[in-house]
Length: 302
Ligand code: AMP
Ligand code: MG
Image 1: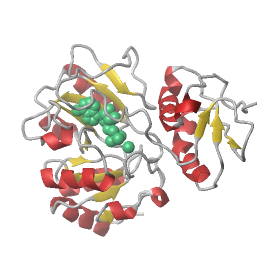
Image 2: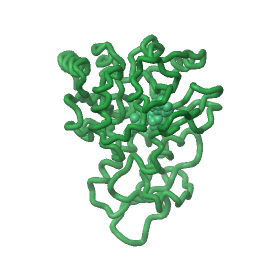
Image 3: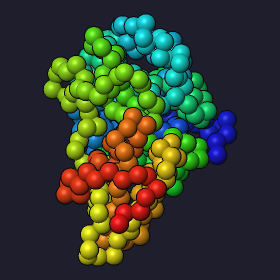
């Protein structure tokens, strides 16, 4: 785990424009000073992430969040008080000093307060907001445990143990007339419909929405297992929160076992399962992802 000396060293590296892999409750992040354009560019380079995909900016308190925006609607304040620190990213009109590199040229910035003592200590010690996508190469599985983190991507690594939530944050845009859900997660927002961000500019309206993302190397099939090959029939835990917590760790583990395929049935199309379903669909091989057969969780693929 992490001591005060390590936090101080990591904060020094962030201040000097370096990169630090740090734990959050969702997944491990690859962090840089969000206000340092060169440092942020290094994050994109280290991940091989397209410049069109904006980064989430992690802050330690609501004041720091507000300082990155030029509009802070009443609903943002309400949700910040209710859900932060926690796995909710709010997209808001950005302040002028937030580099375009961070937001992929968008006029909005995605912000959250992570619910992890190490992440919060790092942000406070560095004294700056920290832009951080997941600490994995682009298109690969997100790290939820220290052993998944590719240490060579960053200048320093803070080991905070396993991530409790296990999948990326819920992302909601508050930049338009009505809140729009850009990415489902374990945190559910009642009455907020999935949609596209109020788009402008050349960047993706909803980045992270690359069809195939979060992928294992082993083909992941959604639906009945193939007749051929030596595969693994994956039975999901029956509880959505437990399932999210274990999702990437299970995929990391299965991916090391040289199966020809992994087959799993999608959980039900309900709000509680939306985050897990989204990640499974993105991780699946294109052919497998069309087999949208619904099974009760806990039920083994036939
Ligand atoms: P990742 O860092 O790969 O987990 O992805 C970051 C996610 O944050 C993307 O999937 C986007 O949905 C979201 N995001 C961050 N900033 C913005 C923004 N300014 N506008 C829309 N979505 C954003
Ligand atoms: Mg990611």
